[in-house]
Length: 472
Image (cartoon, rainbow, N blue to C red; front, top):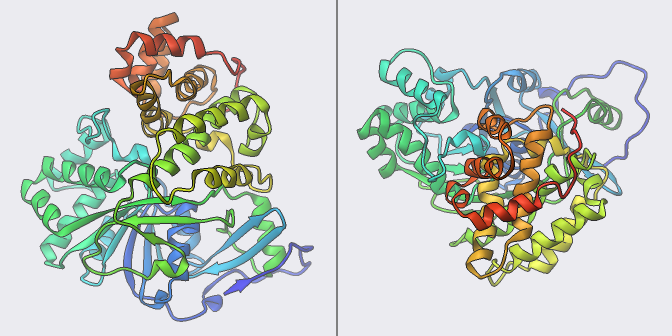
């Protein structure tokens, strides 16, 4: 169901709520289980599944992460929600029906039952980079408190895991017990070689609990790498009102996204998959060039703008990009990144031009505070590879280093610093001078922290964007 309308005055009468009466057809059977029910999942993977030519065969059961709120709200609407594509020229609206169950992530019984069902062919993940609990060596940190707690629960056989990894491992154990056959895990988080990351995290946690389960996962579960892209800001009350005015119904769970979307996948689907290519998804043999293009050019610029922009007093991507100092920093970083990107079909100049247009869309209020979260994890994929490549080529890597320096300044200035290493960052910020820089850099990359030249480079770059107090 698609509605192409411009916003209009809200009607005076009470409107019907979006519900199953607006479902265009019968519910599809659950064949995909998703962990991480949030706005991006709904604007991207669920949207692609809705657009697939065989969508009637591929329903999604989506589970929340930390809180059940999104599932409760969406369940009241029978899984239906509105995608608002927000362009400079106006909004368009479409009801998406691919989510057929919205479930509290803590409902381990339902998750295990669905993953163990023979019909389930795909498990997709948008659990955020930090949730993989990777150490600086790229492998699972089994000493992380929540991971250790889940391992204790698994070992005891009582209670339910609280982390996405723990829940997934327990659900995969149920599939093995049911002899339900192979399936694919599709990672849709912004991590380089994210299929391998997901494999290492899942098998690492499984192996710490049950070596036989880890072996079964290796033999029966494929881990698909993807590059995902669609700017999806948080939904506001104004967005809810816009849907109500334009569509004539009340939707408590709309999602706003830019018109642009991109999905590149690489890997095997032993139990089948939807025809996502009908909606524009691309399947490739080698995903690394596409991952790096997106991680460095789009996500890297987002991180740089998130820290530099807030230090300069901005709140959205569009505002920060309009600041000449921030724009120059982004362009310089892109120059460094481009020098280290290779691939016949990457079309880097056109990609950069498109990013400037997308970032400048003032009608997409992409908030910098949202992007700034979990920086110590994100910078390992967005800044560090470019910095290392530049220095290996005999160049300074100053533009990539500036992103890290801006994060360092932000970590000291932010009223609310959301990061898995927030306590360690606070301790580092109690130091001064070179010792502070070295300690903060050690949270991102311990090896670089041992390089006196890199530490000196960062020390000189700190303060570039000022030291203004940023909003919480």
